[in-house]
Amino acid sequence: MLANPPGIEDVFPDRAQSWSLLLSAVREVFRLYNYREIIIPVIEYTEVFARGLGDSTDIVSKEMFSFDDRGGRSLTLRPEGTASVVRAYVSNGEYNRRSIAKLYYCGPMFRAERPQRGRLRQFNQFGAECFGSGDPYYDFEIIAMMDAISKRAGITGYGLLINSIGCPECRGPYLEELRRYYSKHVDRLCEDCVRRLSTNALRLLDCKQEGCIALRNGAPLITAFLDPDCAAHHEAVKALLTRAGIAFVEDPHLVRGLDYYTRTTYEFVSSSLGGQNAFAAGGRYDSLVEVFGGKPTPAVGFAAGIERMLLLIDRPAAPPRLDVYLVHTGGEALAAALRIAGELRAAGLSADIEPQSTGFKSQFKKADRERARFCCIIAGDELASGNCTLKDMDSGAQERIPRENCVAFLRKRLSIEL
Ligand code: HAM
Image 1 (cartoon, protein in one colour):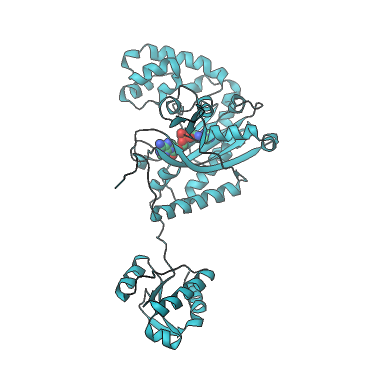
Image 2: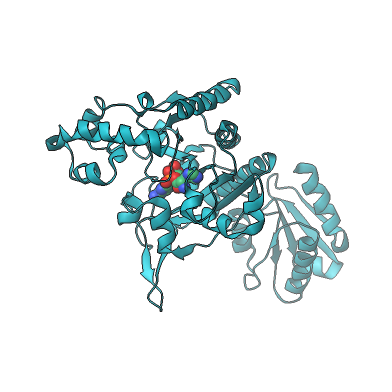
């Protein structure tokens, strides 16, 4: 038997049903806010992510699934969607000429992380990106959409953490101060953080090692370094959230693992997820469109992990039921049953039948396994009289009716009960 590679999962029908219910809620909320779907490729030139996410990020430096094409160019399975959406946006004359472009996407992402609960190597995200405005309203809109999706999905007890990491101008002096502080304690830092001190100092605040967490408490805070515009932007986002009744907690240590952010960063978290406690996250990235060769365009977005959200949806969707299982005795009875199965499907009812199986006991067992609402039985008697027997699988009641009335009868019974 061949197994899946670690961190790469199958999704069987019970979970797939909860998954598609979640995605219906997601698509409905995106529709309400006038976001349109973009379908981006799963494979990009590696450069898209190296340039977009930053060479020193964990994702680019050690978590990408990359390989060379036959011409020797490096390709990568996308680890996230934002860089691809930006690349696509910059290349599309229609969208990048709009004053505001609102796009959403869903699909699999790939990161070579150490697998654990809620942390996979192939996982699925849905996300939204809004291009064209630096107005704090759009930071609010993006957060409000994810809040609405969480509520529609029935997730309770989650928190929203929010921070501002300023713009490159105010972040410069902050990073100097941060490096000065951590340099004094370099002997207490983990190996990764010693490297981060020279490559990506902001990420020192994000380390999950005990020693580094302890040091973080004495570290200088970005909030004290925000310039007046960044501070005003941050206050405006918080005011909009408060006015809309969306609760949040300010977390001055929330820096995120991607280099493209400017100003607002946020995470939706739940303590029931354990170590990987964020189920959605995002922020503003006002410089990324320029990095991809576009004209200066402010932007903001978020992405959520479908598998992590499903861990939080404790009401699994009821498994689907089959409308009708056809029970037959082979030969002409099978031919009549197949005809009815075709008519039922054409009328919008789900129907299943196994041609080789002719024993009643095994066919009823299969009907039970499929949670069939009705069995439609055609055996010798029914064949001779032009009838069929319908068995209500919940009540056990049976009645014999002319075969030509079967579809109308079942439609009526099933639609009354739906
Ligand atoms: P991210 O925080 O890397 O942000 O990922 C967003 C969400 O994807 C996480 O909160 C989590 O739910 C899910 N996720 C990430 N890695 C894994 C994994 N290994 N296994 C399972 N789920 C995972 C981004 O991807 C940014 N592109 C978000 C964004 C959009 N920022 C602006 N626009």
